[in-house]
Image 1 (tube, rainbow, N blue to C red):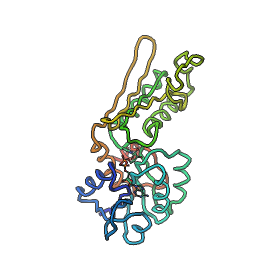
Image 2: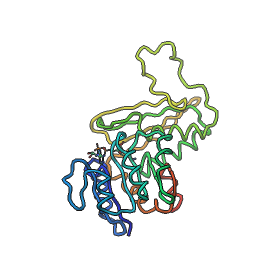
Image 3: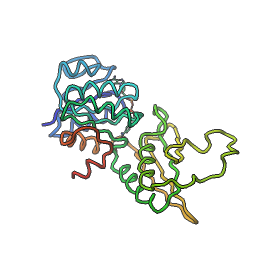
Image 4: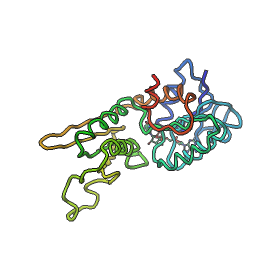
Length: 255
Ligand code: NAD
C-alpha cells in the first residue's frame, strides 16, 4: 500500500486528487494539507506539521507557484517522493529543488497530467520535423495564476528540440506591431498566445503551417477529472524512479 499526502487539498485540483486517490485500493490517503483546513489527525495547515505528525510515501502538490518550492523541499528532505502538478517553476528551479532529495527520493513533475495533452505534445514533436513553422494558442480559466501555461512552455521546448535549427519566425510585423503583444510571447522562437476566460478549463492548440496547408493539433480538458488517471499513475510509479523527471510520457513508457 502506498501512503499519499496532498498539498492544496482544498483547491480545484486538490479536491479532485483527494477523490481519485481515495477511490484507489492500492493508495491510502493519510494527510490532506491546505491553509484553509482546521487541523486534526488527518488534516493539516502546512507541510511541516504533516511531516511531523504523519508518515507518507508520496506527496502530491497542486498549490501555487509561490509555495510549491517550500512544500517540495520539505518533503524531499524527509525522503518523500513528490508528484508535482503546480506550474510556473523554471527548469533551473526544479533542478535546484531536486538537489534536496535524499538518495532515493524522486521529484516527478508533469506540466500536464492529461493523457490526451501528452499525446498532443508527442505528435507535435513528430510534426515539427516536417513542418517547421508553428504557433501555440493556450486557453485557460480566468483564475489561472501563471502565463503562458506550463503545457505551452513544455510543448515549445519539445518542438524546439525536435526541429533543431529554428527557421525564421513567421510574420513580417516587427516594425509595425501597433498593439504590443499582438503576436504573442516569444519562447524558443515560437509565439505563444494565452487566452483567459471564465467557462474554460485547460485547452491548447498547436498550429503548424507550410506552403498551402496547415495542421492543427488540439487538446481540450473539459473537466479536471481528465488529469486524474495521470496523477494516480504517478503516485504508483514515482517510487521506481530517482532524481528529477519532467513529463508523464516517461512514466507511460514503463507501462
Ligand atoms: P487553486 O487555487 O484552486 O488551489 C490551490 C490550493 O493550494 C488552495 O486551496 C490553497 O489554499 C492551497 N495552498 C496555498 N498555499 C498552500 C501551502 N503552503 N500548502 C498547502 N496548500 C496551499 O488552484 P488549482 O486550480 O487547483 O491549480 C493548482 C495548480 O495546479 C496551478 O499551478 C495550476 O496551474 C496547476 N494545474 C496543473 C495541471 C497539470 O496537469 N499539471 C492541471 C491543472 C492545474
